[in-house]
Length: 396
Image (cartoon, rainbow, N blue to C red; front, side, top):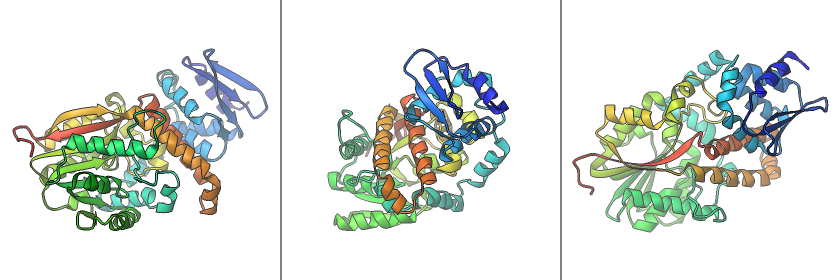
């Protein structure tokens, strides 16, 4: 075996939680960890070892995309590594020799200025509405965590439960004008307008989402009630009774948290509420994460940056009068949401090929969905509902 394998082997000996079975290209196998049921990595190409040693987290994902390794339980493998991250960090596996200079340069290029935000959003969300419709539920087209009553509940029902939970948290009434920052394909805007009779303005900077949402609003006969604008949050004008933003803060970026929250403060009427659904990273990991872009930031969400609750609180304190009125963590529901999306994606692999999405692209997306599922399953990432208000104002 080569030097890179020997390095990997010595690090994997530190696994203590769970059981990894590593099947090697020569037909032999090695076991690491405890005596529980194993998760398996089948190495197809010895280049796997070099990519992981030189690239760390990013190299492992790139090796998967390239077909250098496989697993029948990819989510389980990724969960095992998360569960052993402290031991692996001490051994040096997760940080040694990573291509920091290259990756930090890539991340710096993807800064979320107005122009940069449009470019970054285009790269992910403008893959095509037909693409996203293959695995998102057709009723809501929500690309964010659902809220399940039971694991057997349908995805559309769970997405609508999430929407109605946000309506409840925002205390939206028929008299209100609601601004949705990052309206996606229009699922929330349409449902809240129908459910409450309120007026909604939704903004997006994705051309594909803009066209799709406008069409859906027209089909629902809501053109006098719901307006969809192609607009950056920094350019929105007017005042609104409520502001709702569902998993858009992740695209804002560390330097712009204050800008984003200041915009919410500027746009919110006295007595108004802001309700955010946001993916967060634990405070203890934030600084290292911010300085070392991961596989998702490089390959899936250019310019993406998960905030931590403390970083948001700091920005809120510095730039706005807002305080947190309410907080829920629905992260475990995201694991199930992602599992549903992955199953739907995998069921459409032939159709994806016919649409021009080749095997490499599909492997990348399966890795992305499993990577995120593992993160939420292990509480390595969270999904928060936050209600923000200004002290000293009666809710209107």
